[in-house]
Image (cartoon, rainbow, N blue to C red; front, side, top):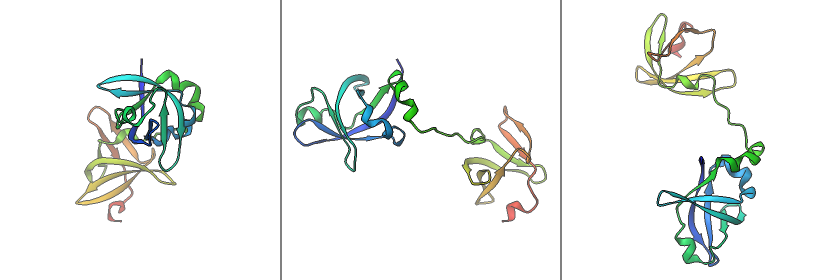
Length: 172
């Protein structure tokens, strides 16, 4: 059985067994549809039926059979999981997570046809016109455009990408 980490419980709330909780932002749209969650207790995923979810500044979770503060306190600061199959019916409500086309280049060495090795790609960020590689070069952070027209060759084994950069780009 595959589990997906979606959040964590926080402090007990009130005297009726409620818990404050935090969900990963991706799973907020399905919070009202939670029927069963699994809490990580001593490295075991223990199932709990969800009685009520209240979202807001202090989101609260009421689990069946947890009837007082003492019981809720035993469940404080536990990771919350869903079974992967429980996510299937609600997947249409989850936002699409886009991956960047060149994100896989993080960790590659970037080299220019003329200037040679420039440095390691530390991050890839999306900008309105294209994706940009972020790297440290000569003690400063530089952004290099990533576009198929600039790529000369790519060595996946050695993790090196060679670009033909426009003259003066590094001087900006």
